[in-house]
Image (cartoon, rainbow, N blue to C red; front, side, top):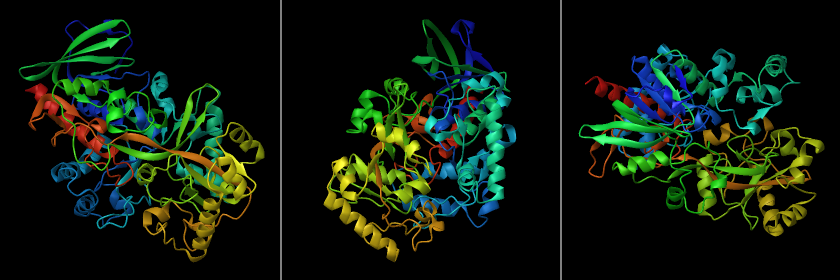
Length: 573
Protein backbone atom coordinates (compact mmCIF):
# COMPACT_ATOMS: atom_id res chain seq x y z
CA UNK A 1 0.00 0.00 0.00
CA UNK A 2 1.19 3.47 -0.85
CA UNK A 3 0.28 6.33 1.49
CA UNK A 4 0.12 9.37 -0.75
CA UNK A 5 1.46 12.49 0.94
CA UNK A 6 1.54 14.46 -2.30
CA UNK A 7 -0.74 14.27 -5.32
CA UNK A 8 2.27 15.07 -7.49
CA UNK A 9 3.36 11.47 -6.97
CA UNK A 10 0.40 10.28 -9.01
CA UNK A 11 1.24 9.83 -12.70
CA UNK A 12 -0.52 12.23 -15.03
CA UNK A 13 -2.42 9.33 -16.59
CA UNK A 14 -3.21 7.54 -13.31
CA UNK A 15 -6.16 5.19 -13.52
CA UNK A 16 -7.82 2.99 -10.90
CA UNK A 17 -10.27 0.15 -11.06
CA UNK A 18 -12.04 1.52 -7.99
CA UNK A 19 -12.05 4.85 -6.21
CA UNK A 20 -13.50 4.87 -2.69
CA UNK A 21 -14.51 8.17 -1.07
CA UNK A 22 -14.18 7.81 2.69
CA UNK A 23 -11.94 5.59 4.81
CA UNK A 24 -14.38 4.57 7.51
CA UNK A 25 -15.28 0.95 8.14
CA UNK A 26 -17.41 0.49 5.00
CA UNK A 27 -15.02 2.37 2.73
CA UNK A 28 -11.97 0.48 3.93
CA UNK A 29 -13.86 -2.79 3.46
CA UNK A 30 -14.80 -1.88 -0.12
CA UNK A 31 -11.18 -1.04 -0.88
CA UNK A 32 -10.02 -4.28 0.73
CA UNK A 33 -12.44 -6.47 -1.20
CA UNK A 34 -11.24 -4.96 -4.48
CA UNK A 35 -7.60 -5.31 -3.39
CA UNK A 36 -8.14 -8.98 -2.53
CA UNK A 37 -9.19 -9.44 -6.15
CA UNK A 38 -5.93 -7.84 -7.28
CA UNK A 39 -7.45 -4.56 -8.44
CA UNK A 40 -5.93 -1.07 -8.39
CA UNK A 41 -7.70 0.91 -5.68
CA UNK A 42 -7.59 4.55 -4.60
CA UNK A 43 -8.94 5.19 -1.09
CA UNK A 44 -9.58 8.90 -0.46
CA UNK A 45 -10.03 10.30 3.05
CA UNK A 46 -10.59 13.99 3.78
CA UNK A 47 -9.15 13.83 7.35
CA UNK A 48 -5.72 12.87 8.67
CA UNK A 49 -6.97 9.53 10.06
CA UNK A 50 -8.61 6.38 8.78
CA UNK A 51 -11.54 4.85 10.60
CA UNK A 52 -14.22 7.52 10.69
CA UNK A 53 -16.93 6.92 13.28
CA UNK A 54 -16.20 3.18 13.11
CA UNK A 55 -13.01 3.86 15.07
CA UNK A 56 -15.09 5.42 17.85
CA UNK A 57 -17.73 2.69 17.89
CA UNK A 58 -17.94 -0.68 19.58
CA UNK A 59 -17.10 -2.23 16.22
CA UNK A 60 -20.04 -4.62 16.47
CA UNK A 61 -20.96 -6.07 13.08
CA UNK A 62 -24.48 -7.52 12.75
CA UNK A 63 -24.55 -10.30 10.15
CA UNK A 64 -26.90 -13.26 10.75
CA UNK A 65 -26.11 -16.82 9.74
CA UNK A 66 -22.32 -16.72 9.80
CA UNK A 67 -20.10 -19.64 10.76
CA UNK A 68 -19.62 -17.92 14.12
CA UNK A 69 -23.31 -18.04 15.00
CA UNK A 70 -23.32 -21.81 15.50
CA UNK A 71 -20.87 -21.42 18.38
CA UNK A 72 -23.42 -19.60 20.53
CA UNK A 73 -26.80 -20.10 18.83
CA UNK A 74 -26.89 -23.11 16.50
CA UNK A 75 -30.70 -22.99 16.21
CA UNK A 76 -30.79 -19.57 14.55
CA UNK A 77 -31.65 -19.41 10.85
CA UNK A 78 -31.65 -16.81 8.11
CA UNK A 79 -35.40 -17.30 7.83
CA UNK A 80 -35.72 -16.24 11.47
CA UNK A 81 -33.58 -13.17 10.81
CA UNK A 82 -35.69 -12.26 7.78
CA UNK A 83 -38.86 -12.63 9.84
CA UNK A 84 -37.43 -10.41 12.55
CA UNK A 85 -36.49 -7.69 10.06
CA UNK A 86 -39.92 -7.86 8.45
CA UNK A 87 -41.61 -7.55 11.84
CA UNK A 88 -39.40 -4.62 12.85
CA UNK A 89 -39.16 -2.71 9.56
CA UNK A 90 -42.20 -3.71 7.49
CA UNK A 91 -42.31 -1.88 4.17
CA UNK A 92 -40.01 1.00 5.19
CA UNK A 93 -37.34 -0.49 2.91
CA UNK A 94 -37.48 -2.98 0.03
CA UNK A 95 -37.54 -6.54 1.31
CA UNK A 96 -35.31 -7.52 -1.63
CA UNK A 97 -32.48 -5.36 -0.30
CA UNK A 98 -32.74 -6.89 3.14
CA UNK A 99 -32.75 -10.34 1.57
CA UNK A 100 -29.64 -9.52 -0.46
CA UNK A 101 -27.90 -8.62 2.79
CA UNK A 102 -28.99 -11.86 4.44
CA UNK A 103 -28.17 -14.02 1.42
CA UNK A 104 -24.63 -12.72 1.01
CA UNK A 105 -23.71 -11.91 4.63
CA UNK A 106 -22.36 -15.29 5.76
CA UNK A 107 -20.15 -15.69 2.68
CA UNK A 108 -18.84 -12.12 3.00
CA UNK A 109 -17.73 -12.67 6.59
CA UNK A 110 -16.03 -15.93 5.69
CA UNK A 111 -14.38 -14.30 2.67
CA UNK A 112 -12.92 -11.35 4.58
CA UNK A 113 -11.69 -13.57 7.41
CA UNK A 114 -10.10 -16.02 4.97
CA UNK A 115 -8.29 -13.40 2.91
CA UNK A 116 -7.38 -10.71 5.45
CA UNK A 117 -6.50 -9.95 9.05
CA UNK A 118 -10.11 -9.04 9.89
CA UNK A 119 -11.27 -11.56 12.49
CA UNK A 120 -14.46 -11.77 14.52
CA UNK A 121 -15.97 -13.62 17.45
CA UNK A 122 -19.56 -13.90 18.61
CA UNK A 123 -20.43 -12.45 21.99
CA UNK A 124 -22.11 -15.04 24.25
CA UNK A 125 -25.17 -12.84 24.81
CA UNK A 126 -25.93 -9.85 22.61
CA UNK A 127 -29.69 -9.59 22.00
CA UNK A 128 -31.43 -7.96 19.10
CA UNK A 129 -32.77 -4.62 20.30
CA UNK A 130 -36.48 -5.29 19.77
CA UNK A 131 -36.21 -8.66 21.44
CA UNK A 132 -39.94 -9.14 21.96
CA UNK A 133 -40.56 -9.43 18.20
CA UNK A 134 -40.84 -12.77 16.45
CA UNK A 135 -37.60 -13.88 14.84
CA UNK A 136 -35.37 -11.99 17.26
CA UNK A 137 -32.56 -13.77 19.01
CA UNK A 138 -30.31 -13.36 22.05
CA UNK A 139 -26.96 -14.17 20.45
CA UNK A 140 -25.08 -15.15 17.32
CA UNK A 141 -25.88 -12.35 14.90
CA UNK A 142 -23.73 -9.67 16.51
CA UNK A 143 -20.01 -10.18 15.91
CA UNK A 144 -17.20 -8.24 17.54
CA UNK A 145 -13.68 -7.79 16.15
CA UNK A 146 -10.89 -9.58 17.94
CA UNK A 147 -8.49 -7.28 19.83
CA UNK A 148 -5.50 -6.23 17.75
CA UNK A 149 -1.89 -5.42 18.54
CA UNK A 150 -1.37 -1.95 17.11
CA UNK A 151 2.39 -2.46 17.14
CA UNK A 152 2.00 -4.68 14.08
CA UNK A 153 1.11 -1.59 12.07
CA UNK A 154 4.49 0.05 12.58
CA UNK A 155 4.41 3.65 11.32
CA UNK A 156 0.83 3.15 10.12
CA UNK A 157 -0.39 3.04 13.73
CA UNK A 158 -0.48 6.84 13.78
CA UNK A 159 -3.08 6.78 11.00
CA UNK A 160 -5.75 5.03 13.09
CA UNK A 161 -8.20 7.53 14.54
CA UNK A 162 -7.64 7.56 18.31
CA UNK A 163 -10.61 6.57 20.49
CA UNK A 164 -12.75 9.10 22.33
CA UNK A 165 -10.60 10.01 25.37
CA UNK A 166 -13.54 9.63 27.74
CA UNK A 167 -13.87 5.99 26.64
CA UNK A 168 -10.32 5.16 27.74
CA UNK A 169 -8.68 4.78 31.15
CA UNK A 170 -5.21 5.38 32.56
CA UNK A 171 -4.28 7.89 29.90
CA UNK A 172 -5.26 6.14 26.69
CA UNK A 173 -5.87 2.48 27.54
CA UNK A 174 -8.78 1.11 25.52
CA UNK A 175 -11.17 -1.25 27.29
CA UNK A 176 -14.11 -3.26 26.01
CA UNK A 177 -16.98 -4.57 28.12
CA UNK A 178 -15.06 -7.74 29.01
CA UNK A 179 -12.22 -5.59 30.34
CA UNK A 180 -14.65 -3.31 32.20
CA UNK A 181 -16.28 -6.25 33.96
CA UNK A 182 -12.87 -7.57 35.02
CA UNK A 183 -11.70 -4.15 36.20
CA UNK A 184 -14.85 -3.70 38.29
CA UNK A 185 -14.27 -7.14 39.84
CA UNK A 186 -10.54 -6.57 40.32
CA UNK A 187 -10.60 -7.25 44.07
CA UNK A 188 -13.30 -9.91 43.98
CA UNK A 189 -11.94 -12.54 41.59
CA UNK A 190 -8.48 -13.91 40.89
CA UNK A 191 -9.36 -14.31 37.20
CA UNK A 192 -10.40 -10.64 37.05
CA UNK A 193 -7.27 -9.59 38.96
CA UNK A 194 -5.08 -11.52 36.52
CA UNK A 195 -6.86 -10.13 33.44
CA UNK A 196 -6.73 -6.57 34.78
CA UNK A 197 -3.08 -6.81 35.78
CA UNK A 198 -2.14 -8.12 32.34
CA UNK A 199 -3.77 -5.28 30.39
CA UNK A 200 -2.54 -2.61 32.85
CA UNK A 201 1.06 -3.81 32.63
CA UNK A 202 0.80 -3.94 28.85
CA UNK A 203 -0.48 -0.38 28.82
CA UNK A 204 2.30 0.81 31.13
CA UNK A 205 4.87 -0.65 28.74
CA UNK A 206 3.10 0.97 25.77
CA UNK A 207 3.28 4.43 27.31
CA UNK A 208 7.07 4.27 27.31
CA UNK A 209 7.04 4.21 23.49
CA UNK A 210 3.62 5.30 22.23
CA UNK A 211 1.24 8.24 22.86
CA UNK A 212 -1.54 5.77 23.70
CA UNK A 213 -2.13 2.09 24.28
CA UNK A 214 -1.48 -0.29 21.40
CA UNK A 215 -3.86 -2.99 22.59
CA UNK A 216 -6.78 -2.07 20.37
CA UNK A 217 -10.34 -3.25 20.95
CA UNK A 218 -13.82 -2.61 19.54
CA UNK A 219 -13.99 -0.24 16.57
CA UNK A 220 -10.32 0.68 16.80
CA UNK A 221 -9.44 -3.00 16.46
CA UNK A 222 -11.65 -3.38 13.38
CA UNK A 223 -10.15 -0.31 11.71
CA UNK A 224 -6.60 -1.41 12.54
CA UNK A 225 -7.28 -4.88 11.13
CA UNK A 226 -8.65 -3.36 7.92
CA UNK A 227 -5.64 -1.04 7.63
CA UNK A 228 -3.17 -3.86 8.33
CA UNK A 229 -4.88 -5.95 5.65
CA UNK A 230 -4.82 -3.11 3.10
CA UNK A 231 -1.14 -2.50 3.79
CA UNK A 232 -0.31 -5.92 2.35
CA UNK A 233 -1.67 -5.07 -1.10
CA UNK A 234 0.60 -3.18 -3.49
CA UNK A 235 -2.36 -2.09 -5.60
CA UNK A 236 -3.83 0.14 -2.87
CA UNK A 237 -3.17 3.88 -2.72
CA UNK A 238 -4.35 5.79 0.38
CA UNK A 239 -4.72 9.56 0.08
CA UNK A 240 -5.30 11.31 3.41
CA UNK A 241 -6.20 14.98 3.88
CA UNK A 242 -7.62 14.74 0.37
CA UNK A 243 -11.03 15.69 -1.02
CA UNK A 244 -12.87 14.73 -4.17
CA UNK A 245 -13.91 17.99 -5.80
CA UNK A 246 -15.53 16.67 -8.95
CA UNK A 247 -16.82 13.41 -10.41
CA UNK A 248 -16.76 13.25 -14.19
CA UNK A 249 -19.47 11.34 -16.03
CA UNK A 250 -19.37 10.15 -19.62
CA UNK A 251 -21.54 8.08 -21.90
CA UNK A 252 -20.73 4.86 -20.04
CA UNK A 253 -20.99 6.31 -16.55
CA UNK A 254 -18.42 7.62 -14.08
CA UNK A 255 -15.08 8.14 -15.79
CA UNK A 256 -12.94 10.51 -13.69
CA UNK A 257 -12.53 12.08 -10.26
CA UNK A 258 -10.68 15.29 -9.45
CA UNK A 259 -8.70 15.26 -6.22
CA UNK A 260 -7.59 18.20 -4.08
CA UNK A 261 -4.88 17.96 -1.41
CA UNK A 262 -3.88 21.36 -0.07
CA UNK A 263 -2.89 23.44 -3.09
CA UNK A 264 -2.43 20.40 -5.33
CA UNK A 265 -4.97 19.05 -7.79
CA UNK A 266 -5.00 15.89 -9.85
CA UNK A 267 -7.57 14.24 -12.09
CA UNK A 268 -7.50 10.44 -12.27
CA UNK A 269 -9.38 8.02 -14.48
CA UNK A 270 -11.84 5.49 -13.10
CA UNK A 271 -12.28 2.15 -14.83
CA UNK A 272 -14.81 0.41 -12.59
CA UNK A 273 -16.55 2.90 -10.41
CA UNK A 274 -16.67 5.26 -7.45
CA UNK A 275 -17.91 4.06 -4.07
CA UNK A 276 -19.45 6.69 -1.80
CA UNK A 277 -18.51 5.83 1.78
CA UNK A 278 -18.12 9.30 3.25
CA UNK A 279 -20.12 8.64 6.42
CA UNK A 280 -23.41 10.34 5.72
CA UNK A 281 -24.86 13.84 5.58
CA UNK A 282 -24.78 14.71 9.29
CA UNK A 283 -22.25 17.57 9.22
CA UNK A 284 -23.61 19.16 6.03
CA UNK A 285 -25.23 22.39 7.22
CA UNK A 286 -28.06 22.54 4.68
CA UNK A 287 -28.89 18.84 4.73
CA UNK A 288 -28.78 18.78 8.50
CA UNK A 289 -31.25 21.66 8.75
CA UNK A 290 -33.57 19.90 6.32
CA UNK A 291 -33.34 16.37 7.75
CA UNK A 292 -32.56 16.91 11.45
CA UNK A 293 -34.34 20.15 12.38
CA UNK A 294 -33.74 21.23 15.95
CA UNK A 295 -30.79 18.87 16.54
CA UNK A 296 -27.75 20.98 17.34
CA UNK A 297 -24.58 19.94 15.54
CA UNK A 298 -22.81 20.18 18.89
CA UNK A 299 -24.78 17.13 20.08
CA UNK A 300 -23.44 14.88 17.32
CA UNK A 301 -20.90 12.38 18.75
CA UNK A 302 -19.78 11.07 15.35
CA UNK A 303 -16.35 11.64 13.81
CA UNK A 304 -15.72 14.92 11.96
CA UNK A 305 -15.23 13.67 8.41
CA UNK A 306 -18.83 13.23 7.24
CA UNK A 307 -19.36 16.72 5.91
CA UNK A 308 -21.77 15.64 3.19
CA UNK A 309 -19.54 17.11 0.46
CA UNK A 310 -19.69 13.81 -1.42
CA UNK A 311 -23.48 13.99 -1.24
CA UNK A 312 -23.44 17.26 -3.16
CA UNK A 313 -21.42 15.58 -5.91
CA UNK A 314 -23.77 12.60 -6.04
CA UNK A 315 -26.90 14.75 -6.12
CA UNK A 316 -25.43 16.70 -9.04
CA UNK A 317 -25.20 13.36 -10.84
CA UNK A 318 -28.88 12.66 -10.21
CA UNK A 319 -28.64 10.51 -7.07
CA UNK A 320 -31.83 10.33 -5.01
CA UNK A 321 -32.30 9.78 -1.29
CA UNK A 322 -34.25 6.80 -0.02
CA UNK A 323 -37.71 7.40 1.41
CA UNK A 324 -39.98 6.02 4.12
CA UNK A 325 -37.61 5.71 7.04
CA UNK A 326 -38.73 5.99 10.65
CA UNK A 327 -36.06 8.63 11.19
CA UNK A 328 -33.38 10.29 9.09
CA UNK A 329 -30.75 9.44 11.70
CA UNK A 330 -29.90 6.97 14.40
CA UNK A 331 -29.87 8.49 17.88
CA UNK A 332 -28.43 8.18 21.37
CA UNK A 333 -28.73 10.32 24.48
CA UNK A 334 -25.48 12.22 24.99
CA UNK A 335 -23.99 14.43 27.68
CA UNK A 336 -21.60 17.32 27.01
CA UNK A 337 -18.47 18.58 28.72
CA UNK A 338 -15.77 21.01 27.68
CA UNK A 339 -12.28 19.55 27.64
CA UNK A 340 -9.20 21.45 28.84
CA UNK A 341 -8.18 22.07 25.21
CA UNK A 342 -11.48 23.83 24.51
CA UNK A 343 -13.06 21.01 22.49
CA UNK A 344 -16.33 19.45 23.57
CA UNK A 345 -16.62 15.87 24.72
CA UNK A 346 -19.89 14.37 23.47
CA UNK A 347 -20.50 11.22 25.48
CA UNK A 348 -23.11 8.69 24.28
CA UNK A 349 -25.05 6.95 27.05
CA UNK A 350 -25.33 3.52 25.47
CA UNK A 351 -25.52 0.86 28.19
CA UNK A 352 -23.43 1.72 31.25
CA UNK A 353 -25.79 3.86 33.31
CA UNK A 354 -29.35 4.84 32.31
CA UNK A 355 -30.78 1.27 32.32
CA UNK A 356 -29.33 0.34 35.70
CA UNK A 357 -31.15 0.14 39.05
CA UNK A 358 -31.14 3.41 40.95
CA UNK A 359 -31.36 5.50 37.79
CA UNK A 360 -34.27 7.39 36.21
CA UNK A 361 -34.68 10.08 33.58
CA UNK A 362 -37.03 13.04 33.89
CA UNK A 363 -38.03 16.16 31.98
CA UNK A 364 -38.29 19.79 33.11
CA UNK A 365 -41.45 18.93 35.06
CA UNK A 366 -39.55 16.24 36.95
CA UNK A 367 -41.62 13.54 35.24
CA UNK A 368 -40.48 10.37 33.51
CA UNK A 369 -41.27 10.30 29.79
CA UNK A 370 -39.37 7.25 28.52
CA UNK A 371 -38.43 3.68 29.33
CA UNK A 372 -34.86 4.26 30.50
CA UNK A 373 -33.90 0.73 29.43
CA UNK A 374 -35.05 0.97 25.84
CA UNK A 375 -32.51 1.12 23.03
CA UNK A 376 -30.46 4.29 22.80
CA UNK A 377 -32.08 5.03 19.41
CA UNK A 378 -35.63 4.93 20.78
CA UNK A 379 -34.47 6.87 23.84
CA UNK A 380 -33.11 9.67 21.64
CA UNK A 381 -36.26 9.72 19.54
CA UNK A 382 -38.41 9.85 22.67
CA UNK A 383 -36.52 12.90 23.93
CA UNK A 384 -37.46 14.72 20.75
CA UNK A 385 -41.06 13.57 20.46
CA UNK A 386 -41.71 14.40 24.12
CA UNK A 387 -39.87 17.71 23.74
CA UNK A 388 -37.72 16.80 26.71
CA UNK A 389 -34.47 18.47 25.72
CA UNK A 390 -32.48 18.57 27.82
CA UNK A 391 -33.54 15.61 29.89
CA UNK A 392 -32.04 14.82 33.28
CA UNK A 393 -30.50 11.46 34.18
CA UNK A 394 -30.79 11.16 37.96
CA UNK A 395 -29.27 8.66 40.37
CA UNK A 396 -28.53 8.26 44.05
CA UNK A 397 -25.10 7.92 45.66
CA UNK A 398 -25.21 4.12 45.65
CA UNK A 399 -26.00 3.87 41.94
CA UNK A 400 -23.25 6.32 41.08
CA UNK A 401 -20.77 4.31 43.15
CA UNK A 402 -21.72 1.07 41.40
CA UNK A 403 -22.29 2.20 37.83
CA UNK A 404 -20.96 5.71 37.41
CA UNK A 405 -22.93 8.25 35.42
CA UNK A 406 -21.81 9.45 32.02
CA UNK A 407 -18.18 10.51 32.15
CA UNK A 408 -18.04 9.99 35.91
CA UNK A 409 -16.74 6.47 36.39
CA UNK A 410 -17.89 3.82 38.85
CA UNK A 411 -16.35 4.13 42.29
CA UNK A 412 -15.69 7.85 41.91
CA UNK A 413 -14.89 9.51 45.20
CA UNK A 414 -15.15 13.19 46.20
CA UNK A 415 -11.82 14.07 44.56
CA UNK A 416 -12.80 12.29 41.36
CA UNK A 417 -16.15 14.07 41.20
CA UNK A 418 -14.83 17.52 42.10
CA UNK A 419 -13.89 18.60 38.53
CA UNK A 420 -17.23 17.41 37.15
CA UNK A 421 -19.11 19.31 39.85
CA UNK A 422 -16.97 22.40 39.40
CA UNK A 423 -17.65 22.76 35.67
CA UNK A 424 -21.34 21.88 35.97
CA UNK A 425 -21.28 18.58 34.09
CA UNK A 426 -22.43 16.80 37.25
CA UNK A 427 -25.01 18.29 39.62
CA UNK A 428 -25.18 17.20 43.27
CA UNK A 429 -28.03 17.69 45.71
CA UNK A 430 -28.10 16.79 49.37
CA UNK A 431 -31.80 16.07 48.91
CA UNK A 432 -34.15 15.71 45.98
CA UNK A 433 -35.45 19.22 46.67
CA UNK A 434 -31.89 20.54 46.57
CA UNK A 435 -31.10 18.68 43.35
CA UNK A 436 -34.27 19.91 41.65
CA UNK A 437 -33.56 23.50 42.67
CA UNK A 438 -30.03 23.34 41.23
CA UNK A 439 -31.29 21.77 38.00
CA UNK A 440 -34.14 24.24 37.66
CA UNK A 441 -36.80 21.53 37.44
CA UNK A 442 -39.94 20.79 39.44
CA UNK A 443 -39.08 19.45 42.89
CA UNK A 444 -42.61 18.11 43.37
CA UNK A 445 -42.44 16.29 40.05
CA UNK A 446 -39.02 14.81 40.76
CA UNK A 447 -39.99 13.59 44.21
CA UNK A 448 -43.17 12.04 42.86
CA UNK A 449 -41.21 10.26 40.11
CA UNK A 450 -38.68 8.92 42.60
CA UNK A 451 -41.46 7.77 44.91
CA UNK A 452 -43.06 5.88 42.02
CA UNK A 453 -39.84 4.25 40.84
CA UNK A 454 -39.02 3.20 44.40
CA UNK A 455 -42.39 1.50 44.59
CA UNK A 456 -41.85 -0.17 41.23
CA UNK A 457 -38.50 -1.46 42.48
CA UNK A 458 -40.39 -3.23 45.28
CA UNK A 459 -42.80 -4.98 42.90
CA UNK A 460 -40.44 -5.36 39.93
CA UNK A 461 -43.11 -3.92 37.62
CA UNK A 462 -43.11 -0.53 35.89
CA UNK A 463 -46.73 0.07 34.81
CA UNK A 464 -45.87 3.44 33.26
CA UNK A 465 -43.19 2.45 30.73
CA UNK A 466 -42.72 -1.33 31.16
CA UNK A 467 -39.06 -0.99 32.04
CA UNK A 468 -37.18 -4.26 32.11
CA UNK A 469 -39.73 -6.47 30.36
CA UNK A 470 -37.64 -7.59 27.36
CA UNK A 471 -34.47 -9.66 27.12
CA UNK A 472 -32.60 -6.72 25.60
CA UNK A 473 -33.53 -4.42 28.48
CA UNK A 474 -32.71 -7.00 31.11
CA UNK A 475 -29.33 -7.63 29.49
CA UNK A 476 -28.24 -4.02 30.05
CA UNK A 477 -29.59 -3.94 33.60
CA UNK A 478 -27.91 -5.54 36.60
CA UNK A 479 -29.24 -8.92 37.62
CA UNK A 480 -26.56 -9.10 40.32
CA UNK A 481 -28.20 -6.21 42.15
CA UNK A 482 -30.65 -8.69 43.59
CA UNK A 483 -33.89 -6.91 42.79
CA UNK A 484 -37.02 -8.36 41.28
CA UNK A 485 -36.27 -6.52 38.04
CA UNK A 486 -32.66 -6.02 36.87
CA UNK A 487 -33.52 -2.57 35.56
CA UNK A 488 -35.31 -1.23 38.64
CA UNK A 489 -33.89 -0.13 41.94
CA UNK A 490 -34.74 2.52 44.54
CA UNK A 491 -33.16 5.97 44.76
CA UNK A 492 -32.82 6.37 48.50
CA UNK A 493 -29.20 7.07 49.40
CA UNK A 494 -28.32 10.78 49.52
CA UNK A 495 -26.70 12.73 48.02
CA UNK A 496 -28.37 12.62 44.63
CA UNK A 497 -26.73 13.36 41.28
CA UNK A 498 -27.75 14.26 37.72
CA UNK A 499 -26.36 14.99 34.28
CA UNK A 500 -28.13 16.67 31.38
CA UNK A 501 -28.91 14.62 28.29
CA UNK A 502 -29.36 15.71 24.68
CA UNK A 503 -30.44 13.73 21.58
CA UNK A 504 -27.26 13.08 19.60
CA UNK A 505 -27.33 11.75 16.05
CA UNK A 506 -24.81 8.92 15.94
CA UNK A 507 -25.17 8.24 12.21
CA UNK A 508 -27.29 8.83 9.15
CA UNK A 509 -30.18 6.48 8.44
CA UNK A 510 -31.23 8.28 5.27
CA UNK A 511 -28.83 7.85 2.38
CA UNK A 512 -28.92 7.31 -1.34
CA UNK A 513 -31.33 4.77 -2.77
CA UNK A 514 -29.51 1.78 -4.24
CA UNK A 515 -30.14 -1.60 -5.78
CA UNK A 516 -28.89 -4.96 -4.52
CA UNK A 517 -25.37 -4.28 -5.86
CA UNK A 518 -25.22 -0.95 -4.00
CA UNK A 519 -25.55 0.96 -7.30
CA UNK A 520 -26.95 4.45 -6.71
CA UNK A 521 -30.32 5.05 -8.36
CA UNK A 522 -31.58 8.15 -10.14
CA UNK A 523 -35.07 9.67 -10.08
CA UNK A 524 -36.37 7.05 -12.52
CA UNK A 525 -35.04 4.22 -10.37
CA UNK A 526 -32.22 3.42 -12.81
CA UNK A 527 -28.62 2.88 -11.69
CA UNK A 528 -26.10 5.63 -12.34
CA UNK A 529 -23.32 3.77 -14.12
CA UNK A 530 -20.24 3.35 -11.95
CA UNK A 531 -21.63 5.07 -8.84
CA UNK A 532 -22.10 3.07 -5.63
CA UNK A 533 -23.01 3.93 -2.04
CA UNK A 534 -22.24 1.96 1.13
CA UNK A 535 -22.24 2.54 4.86
CA UNK A 536 -24.17 5.61 5.95
CA UNK A 537 -24.10 7.03 2.43
CA UNK A 538 -26.41 4.19 1.41
CA UNK A 539 -30.03 4.41 2.52
CA UNK A 540 -30.18 2.08 5.51
CA UNK A 541 -31.86 -1.24 4.81
CA UNK A 542 -33.22 -0.90 8.35
CA UNK A 543 -35.39 2.07 7.38
CA UNK A 544 -34.41 4.18 10.37
CA UNK A 545 -35.25 1.35 12.80
CA UNK A 546 -32.41 0.32 15.11
CA UNK A 547 -32.99 -3.40 15.08
CA UNK A 548 -29.77 -4.70 16.65
CA UNK A 549 -26.20 -3.84 17.61
CA UNK A 550 -23.99 -3.30 14.57
CA UNK A 551 -26.72 -2.67 11.99
CA UNK A 552 -24.62 0.00 10.27
CA UNK A 553 -21.32 -1.90 10.15
CA UNK A 554 -22.85 -5.25 9.17
CA UNK A 555 -24.74 -4.06 6.08
CA UNK A 556 -21.87 -1.63 5.42
CA UNK A 557 -19.44 -4.51 5.04
CA UNK A 558 -21.77 -6.76 3.05
CA UNK A 559 -22.74 -4.08 0.54
CA UNK A 560 -19.11 -2.95 0.35
CA UNK A 561 -18.37 -6.44 -0.96
CA UNK A 562 -21.25 -6.32 -3.43
CA UNK A 563 -20.26 -2.86 -4.66
CA UNK A 564 -16.60 -3.82 -5.06
CA UNK A 565 -17.52 -7.03 -6.86
CA UNK A 566 -19.79 -5.24 -9.32
CA UNK A 567 -17.40 -2.35 -9.91
CA UNK A 568 -14.38 -4.56 -10.50
CA UNK A 569 -16.36 -6.67 -12.95
CA UNK A 570 -17.31 -3.44 -14.69
CA UNK A 571 -13.63 -2.47 -14.82
CA UNK A 572 -12.72 -5.80 -16.34
CA UNK A 573 -15.43 -5.38 -18.98
